[in-house]
Image 1: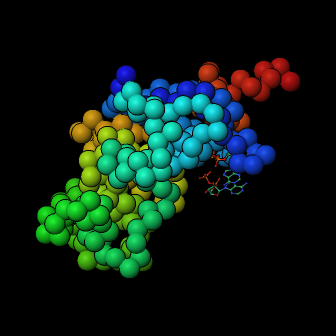
Image 2: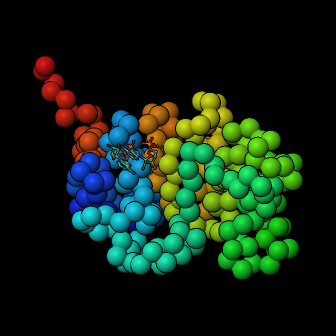
Length: 230
Ligand code: ADP
Ligand code: ADP
């Protein structure tokens, strides 16, 4: 079995149910948008799929292996190798320059400084921000920070990118630019993307949209849990 699967995933925070029974298949190379209103469980689903959170019940599989039962160290290793995560706010390290931030995953993986620095410069260049190599995040625009964050997420060559509202902090135009770039690199490298967004314009970049409602997948995507005839 290839790709990523959630099977009957249930997850609560104390008494608050976030996912009530979610099953989902994501094929390798596919770009899937997870959408739905605030509080419907999008982030929780993303965190379960990425091995950040453990479901209370149900299973998560990646390339035929059940990963939700792996110990934290193994899941964390997966997130540094085959999985990459990207959040609403780039979460760059404030004290580091762009090139240092982007090189960080390689340095942590034991790549030599020179090689990591060169690769980071290449990735900054691909995202059109090579001139920011020596700039710290505080002196960048939101869009520039998000480009650096994407370069950092992609530099290790992950097979899946989990992106939680990656354009949420940007205006519409720079949000769409950033997403266009992310999607282009994903297509070039056959990278899978699971993209959480509440913005229809952003969801439109995906191959497929999975709509959540109140912790379950809305099979129609039409919001038919609301009565048609009031
Ligand atoms: P979405 O990403 O669609 O906004 P979330 O997955 O963040 O949804 O949240 C789903 C539900 O779980 C909401 O009711 C939210 O308030 C609750 N929730 C999320 N994270 C926590 C948390 N850390 N502690 C308590 N409740 C949480
Ligand atoms: P998003 O919809 O992008 O997940 P939220 O504002 O729902 O953003 O959540 C932001 C953070 O707050 C997340 O880490 C989430 O787990 C946490 N959170 C969300 N709802 C609650 C809650 N009811 N109680 C405690 N933490 C929460």
